[in-house]
Amino acid sequence: MNLAKWQRPAFWALSPVRHVANLRDEVDNLFNLAFARLGNTPEAEPRSQFLEGWYPAVDVTEDKDTLSVRAEIPGMKKEDIEISLHEGFLTLSGERKGGEKLEGSETYRSERWFGRFHRTISLPYAVVADQIKATYTDGVLTVTLPKAEEAKPKQIPITVK
Amino acid sequence: MNTVAQEETRPQTAPNVETPREYISPGVNIVETKEGYILEAEMPGVNKDGLDIQLEENVLTLVGRRAPAPGGTSLYRESRAADFRRVFELDPSIDTQKINARIDQGILTLTLPKAEKVKPQKITVG
Image (cartoon, rainbow over all chains, first blue to last red; front, side, top):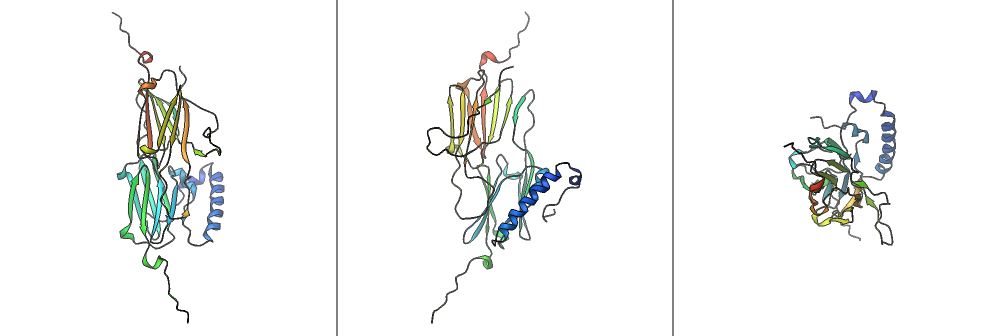
């Protein structure tokens, strides 16, 4: 599996919505740039990847020892969630099953997304790969990544002479 | 054809609250079967204790309060901290005594059965 940053699918170049999505990417990039200048800021891939499926919201928080990545993916089965780490990129993906039309039923509203999702987040710190833990509760995936020793803030005692 | 579960169009703010609260309108799927309606609403981060489902006359209000997010310093955020709320006007064919709700992994599922008298009946010629 290729774990590098997301790449445009081939049909993309022909899609009539590409201008809109390109514009959105550009706006996103401006924001990402603005925030990236503030220092250790995680970065998500361009939003135009919605064309490949649905696009759950992702949050990243940190405390002294850990990074936490939280994704809102309600209605999944645990076994359909995939998490992988490759060269500082954390990839969350999976498939939400369901959404098939019931026999003899009529659809009134269809606002939920089914099928595959895929998010890649560039982690701002080195993490201990074999100590990553994940939980899935109330439709929220939480991935806890312990920071590598060198990424933790250190206090250097300085004696004033 | 009967009207389906209609959506209320008033602004999404709670009444009798001094500062109007902001809510997220959860995405829903609604289907009608012979037996009734099935409504699914996406409320990630909401469990049974955070659910508040009210029925007044034929107006159904769904509120989902999220458990507080864990602490820590936010580095990147796409989710919104607000609770969920959405209001529907129920079709008169629904037997409001028999509405059933459950929530599993952030999906609220309501089954709204039709009253016996409105279900299609097959009449055989004797």
